[in-house]
Length: 85
Image (cartoon, rainbow, N blue to C red; front, side, top):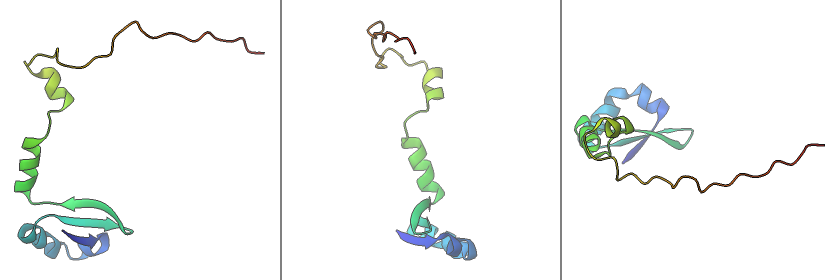
C-alpha cells in the first residue's frame, strides 16, 4: 500500500485516485502518522456487506435476542458512605 502525505494527496488528487483504482488502497498520512485510507468502491461495498450488523439493525431484526450475554442482576453491593468531616 502506497503512503501519501495529506498535502500530496490534496495537490495530486487525480493521481491519488488513479493509484487507488489501479493499485488498490492508498494510505494518507498527516504529520507522519497514518490518518486515512482511500479504497475502491467495490472493496468498500465488500467490507460493508461483511461487517457485523449495527445495534439498530440488531434491535429491529426478527432474530432472537436471547443470545445476548447480559450480566446477572442483583449481585452488586453498595459501599457504605462515610460521613464527611
